[in-house]
Length: 434
Ligand code: 0X9
Ligand code: ZN
Image 1 (cartoon, helix red, strand yellow):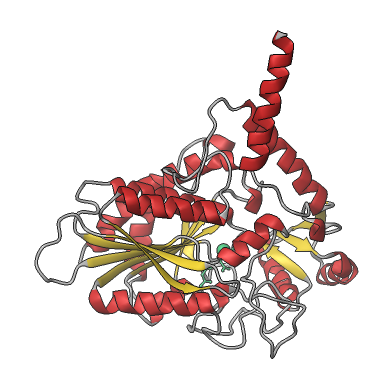
Image 2: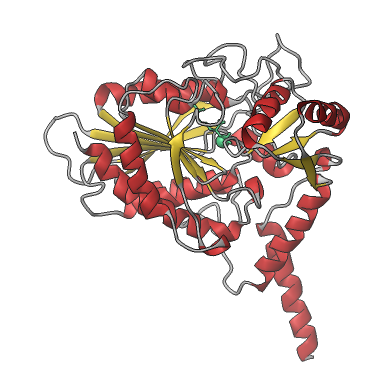
């Protein structure tokens, strides 16, 4: 009798888990035969890989720590010939990405089953962003609506629709003690511009939770704006169909239909074209022209509005992976205005966000120019600096350094969010100093 109860409980738990931890519809079948190769010789490899990526032959993983690439089944021979020609050594570290992710899913499911406290997220009640698994886009929307309902200082607005008709949500956390009519300081936090960087949305939502609840001088008289899920079409596609998807999902009828998607972080109009691809099949495709995409146009419009009504002090674009805090420029090796200030405030962030220790126990953030290893244009950071003259601009690459890469287990959500929150508490006041 007792045994059958145990079995029943396990079965029920399994049903709950299966329904509450959504699995991909086709087990990432599209990734069958895709491999991950690790190369040696950082700088030489970065240059060659950048070229191969622009040609649509490989997908560079973790831009900035360019030592791993995804090699498509049909381009293995030509990529290996190119590497041999250039004298670059490589190792196949993941021989088949589809089975790799199947294994990873089994592991996460096992971990969930053994965790005692179950997290839920319901349409009418999603009071905390989840930390035991990555949320679906509808769940994130439920959470944002809940956040607005719980805090009178929170406003939520759809600033546009995507190609697949999803909302692009912008959160505005208003000051609790606004004085007079003077121009207030504003900060902007962007999350999820790249589809596969799931930890970006997860951490950005956690930050919004903490910022909305904050009743200290940190947020008392500033306007905080955030678009935590810039690319919901890409996110959902990466969740359901291709875990390694990076771009959005738009189809341009004047370009080839079989290669959808634009790299939204190559589509802004600052240094447009440098280190980006004109090949629609490449993962770094820049789009037909600057701001060709609904998402970048929606963000541009709102950021311009903030820039005209506020003192725009800080822009932070949250990405993964690499544990780096980048400051502009990214499209040229020249120095951007206020480099020294960005560097020193960035160091304060990194010091507060870094945790000493090895492996899982330690996380070290490094502050560096985004053009340090490779040039790439058309990103949020450079446009904020160049077009809006925002003094403190960063791209944050969250954990890890490449062991899990984009497939960072959800067990890291809590620690990554905690670390970034510590860093942000140091950075915001520094960015507000005149
Ligand atoms: O390459 C990118 O878009 C970012 N790295 S990622 O691996 N998340 O794709 C870095 C962008 C840094 N900024 C510029 N190059 N402007
Ligand atoms: Zn990214």
